[in-house]
Length: 389
Ligand SMILES: NC(=O)c1ccc[n+]([C@@H]2O[C@H](COP(=O)([O-])OP(=O)(O)OC[C@H]3O[C@@H](n4cnc5c(N)ncnc54)[C@H](OP(=O)(O)O)[C@@H]3O)[C@@H](O)[C@H]2O)c1
Image (cartoon, rainbow, N blue to C red; front, top):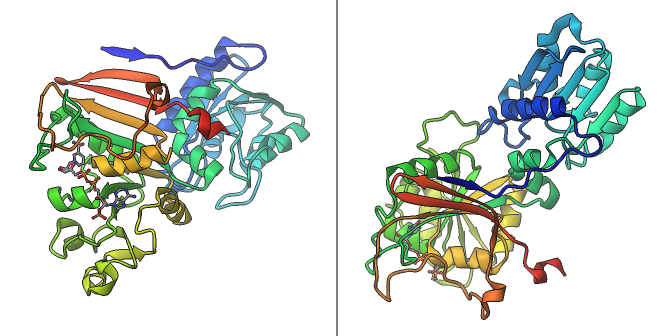
């Protein structure tokens, strides 16, 4: 069962089928870099000759340094004069870790460039296209723009806001619970959903839970997808009263993978020697007067650390805090055919909530996928009217 409500945007100007076909290939190539590009974007490039034959392909991986365009041009060799380049994001015109890709495209004699969107990185934004046009290259922008936006949603959001893209993921029972009344939640969803959860960790720069989850579950919060990743997954706990124990799995493994704990200054946390103990184990304790309660400030701090994507894995109190703050950019719920019951059993989303159904947070572009005996619902929160003011 797969139901997709994703609108497919038409290329701007003349819709040309070969453009969509080649851009789809460029996007497919770009996706091969997932997990290996942060803090850069996913980029794929296809070079096509005047008979619409692919003569070069490339995609970006941060540690390989060289850009998709350079790799594709190299593969195309001496046949690039008069060719068309399909690039999944605006080529850059500045000197970064590599010389400008626009120079390479111009020098190769490329006649036409097709790209879906501008790169909002202020170093690149519009300048790449302008440089290419000034060299007499025809530049077509807009082909598969929506798909390109979605592919690079983390990078683009980070570039536009300076904060990480927040993906909320929860496993819930049919009655909307995320654990039993004793806090037991292992396991609500089945193996397939759990494997996919690791894939979501793989695609994220950081993962975050609340103190409740850190205490009750004693999780490791590592990426066990088995796929190669460039940046180590940063593990974050919102823990105002600094309840994270020195013998917790997180604290004991803090030297292997970073653990950040947001705690308060006026609570028992600051007065006790808990901070010293955790720091001696390698945990970084970030203490301020908000104690992690101000989700926006937490995200700004993560943005300063160049964390572009954050997977929020609960529990319900933290999920509620992110939703109340309007800071969820994407949501995935695995709904399991199990009924937990119990007034005291934690609900998927606590927080303040809303008064009227009309104010409920609705998801757009919803995908509903069967995962074993569970159902995954993934979508993008519709912007509320008040957010638009
Ligand atoms: N099924 C699932 O997908 C899933 C996922 C995660 C967890 N769980 C289950 O959920 C249960 C825990 O959930 P929970 O809702 O009780 O706890 P939680 O959301 O994990 O943690 C809530 C606590 O985090 C601290 N906190 C710090 N900053 C916060 C902020 N900005 N917003 C909200 N809280 C903040 C607060 O601790 P203080 O009040 O002490 O300051 C708060 O009580 C466990 O039983 C766990 O097994 C299930």
